[in-house]
Amino acid sequence: MSDQHRDSELRGRFDELRRLDASRAPSFADVMERAQAGATRDAGSTARYASRVTLRRFGWTAGLAVAAAIAAVIVIPRASSNEDAFEQAVQSFQSDPALGAWRSPTDGLLNLPGSRLLSTVPSLGAGQQ
Amino acid sequence: MSPKELEAWLERLHEESFGWALNCSGGEAARAEDVLQTAYMRVISGRAVYGQRSSFRTWLFGVIRRVALEENRRMRTERKRTVVLEDASMQAIADDRARPDEFESALALRTALAQLPDRQSEVLHLVFYQDMSISDAAEVMEISVGSARTHYERGKARLRVVLEERRNERPASGF
Image (cartoon, rainbow over all chains, first blue to last red):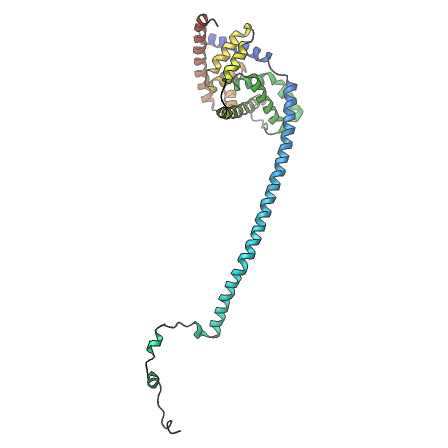
């Protein structure tokens, strides 16, 4: 059997299947009516969904704003007090640089008994007065 | 395209669309009707938009195929959750068998098509049933023309084998 003949045999079967399907096809008006009802319902539910999403978004934004405000109230004064302390330290160092000078903890060991006598120069006639 | 024009096109292609929806739904008429309804809904609501890159029929068949695929996926997921009492495609074939004998050859063809891989069944339906070219069929199926041609050749060969087997079985089984 040639390929063309076999193709036409297949086509014949498909034609028959098409007639069978056509005999049980639903009416266009029915399917369309249901599709239109579905589209209307779909549009309504889409609008409801959109408004739900908008509300939810608004809720989230408001919540975030409240959280940010609380965080600001807690964090900002502490940060400014740290700043103030630093500012005060800088100012006091500027007014008396010795306050900011480094002192060794073993400086005291250098103060020997009588070291004051060694560091001062005796002046003549001072004892007579 | 205006809504009126869209509706006119849908009406003109209704029977062919139903045939294609039936093929994509394993031959189940009720499922095919649901698929067609959802596809029409998408078209008239503007969720599926005709971009005029192909013929309206090719585009519409693509929409129907996508809806059917989604429906099949949803059904598979639902079936996994519930106890399967009966295979749907077998039920469709059983329903068809209740039809008069004049369609015996068509029913044998539907049964044979159900045994083919989806892509092969789809391309054969589009070419032989819908009289589409292989390149149009490829567009509907969203595959390359080369792949469509391969599915077409393999499908045709496989379909002949299945039909031949059924023909040889018939005297013994009395079908």
